[in-house]
Structure formats: structure tokens, C-alpha cells
Length: 122
Image 1 (cartoon, helix red, strand yellow):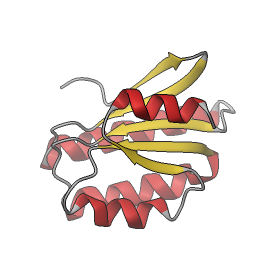
Image 2: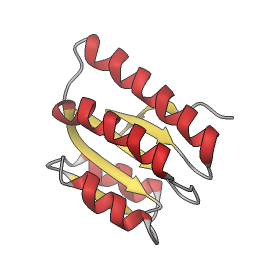
Image 3: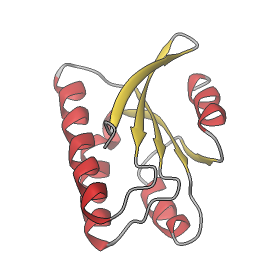
Image 4: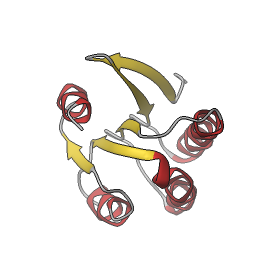
């Protein structure tokens, strides 16, 4: 499995790319745990005003993954300047709507490029 997080520069700004693309069950849970470790590493080093782009295209979010994701949201929300999510279709719209209440700037997109362009404008 590819790493769940990496930091990329887009138009001079650091953006955390979160890759949940195509994940299911145990692999999805493992990725969420890896993402939380990265969030902790960044915040404990003094980072704030984070820009996050999460790709959930073709992933399947079950109850266990939703519980883990809620913990991530609770932890990271005060450090986030903006979050973009790709792949919000079907039942994932429901989870996106709930999760988006915790962030001032959150939006769903159809492509990573659109999401990155939006994030750097915040």
C-alpha cells in the first residue's frame, strides 16, 4: 500500500495529501491511523493553518473507519485552515456533510488539481 500521507508544494504552499483512494476495511483503518500519526507529528512541531487534500475516490467507509475518522477530525480541526475532499459520492456525502460542520473552510471536488487550486487561495 502507498503511504497515506505526503506533503506537496502547490503554488508555493505546503499541502498535506491524504490518500484513501480505493481503500476498504482494514487497509482503510490502517491508513486513517497513519494519517493521525502525521497530524500529531505536524501539530506537535508547531504547525497550524494546515491545508489538507483528502482523496476518498472509490473507497468504502464503514462504521469502524467512521469512528476513527471522527477522532482524527476532533484532533485536527483547530489546526486546519482548509480541507478539500475528492471522491464524495453516494453515501459518503452524508459523512462529508457531518464532518464538514467542524471546519470553517471545507469543500468537495472532482479532481485533486481543482482541490489544490482552491486550497492555495485560502
